[in-house]
Length: 222
Image 1 (spheres, rainbow, N blue to C red):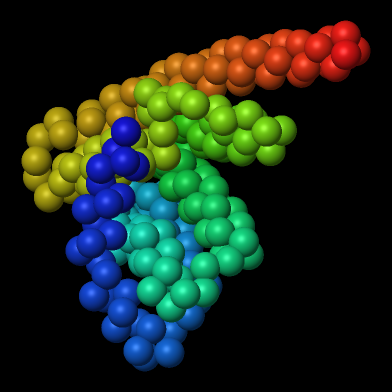
Image 2 (cartoon, rainbow, N blue to C red):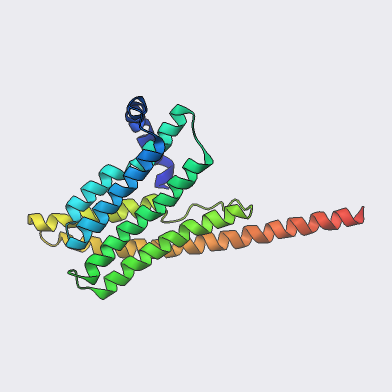
């Protein structure tokens, strides 16, 4: 849902910056790699220490690279299958690092095994949700479903909650409860989205198989 509207808005906003990077000789692939490294550093360095505010700031600065690199490729006329593959693959790496950072905090100084497990579930389910769509499309199905909690929703919910929870260290009382709430929302939403996609793929595959069987039957009648 957010992908549809927010991506178009930020693409327009970031177009001048993308053009500047191209003039400076920076490649889209370099932006993809630097962006992923920045997100991983913010998540795996700051989050396990409980520095959720500063970790979110760092991640937010780098997460927009996901929009900038594609914008650069389109402006330069160098969009490629390799670029799309690299971007998609490193998106999964960055997402995994964010929820791994949460899990490391709750496994360590956060001292909450249940929330550690929830964070790990968010990590795993996010990867599987992405895989179901990619796998369905690879076997020729449209996977025509807008899931309840897709990648954009997972990131926005988690990072906004983490950033606000980090204000607890600045003296804001009880606000740290937002992160556990967000993780539960993402976990449940990801599960619902996974079920939505599996059901959709099952229906579409049954329809495709029935259509193929009908075509073969009509061919035999001729």
